[in-house]
Figure 1 (spheres, rainbow, N blue to C red):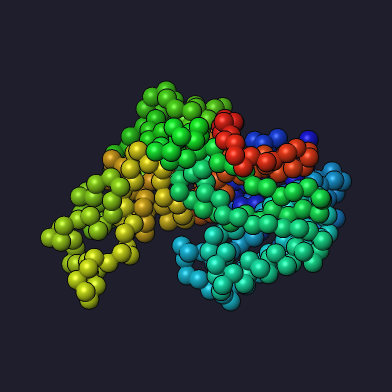
Figure 2 (cartoon, rainbow, N blue to C red):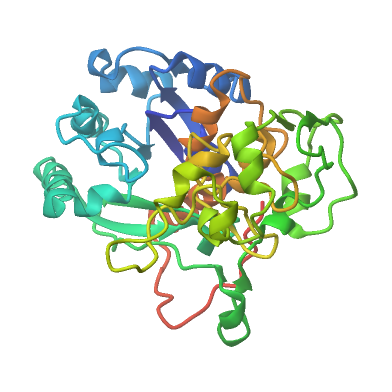
Length: 389
């Protein structure tokens, strides 16, 4: 069984995906104590390091992993490039990738996977992306990068992440081919249609506009629900919602599925939002379109961020109830199964920052095929391999 080491592992989305694909996680490291608690709760047998990454040596991780590492994976912090926050080119976290590259040089795995936010691809005309490519080349690795859409791999979410795959072998580098596509194209391509919000969370017990539930509404009806509930505990956890503010409720109760605050007629808008309707030409503004946005049952969700419990910050209103998403619903939309044992603190950050496990699994399976020297030429073929583990 090939062995991976997970750097900047967070709550463990990448590790879980690689585990589903048949890898053994030999060691992991993250300095965030809350994410570390979740990771260790979920992976009690994986040697874990909470050291500052700058202080740890590659030989230490190799020894912890049993003396050999095939793949190094991880997602160094990237807050300065995120399109969902304030961009800051001087954020010191932007350069943690250098520690990632240093550890790759010291460990010398055959393959490397580094993921990051899509914004890094274009920030400052791609300078940071090019710097990452150059850094891997300097230590003897060929590298390619590509943006992958989670929704294309069975994740019920329009989330995009940038992946760098590097190798010091002669094997050609390839990326996974989508297993899912839009319903309009599914008949023509042979791929599965995107997983919708209802297919992902429709079996969870309704809790109204506020409340908590530890049960399910019905038996799992979709492949995704069966995946999410496989080996799940008898009682559902983290399915709770806080009441929204009076202002937020006055807005979202009038917002239909698949719409945000811009769908409200002028007379229903609170005073503070009325001036946001048009620009100087009289045309409707195009920004703020996902504020107070209600998700649609029949489509995937938008990107789950660390603010999914705040309906005013983005597209996080439940399709039929006047509330935000619960942590369990958000975890489902990230493709974490119900058995995943999150440490119940700073839960929004843990879930929002994670790599969707089913997206990680797809990339891991591709790396496994390259590691084993199998052909990856599927340019004119459509994969019908089941997405769910």
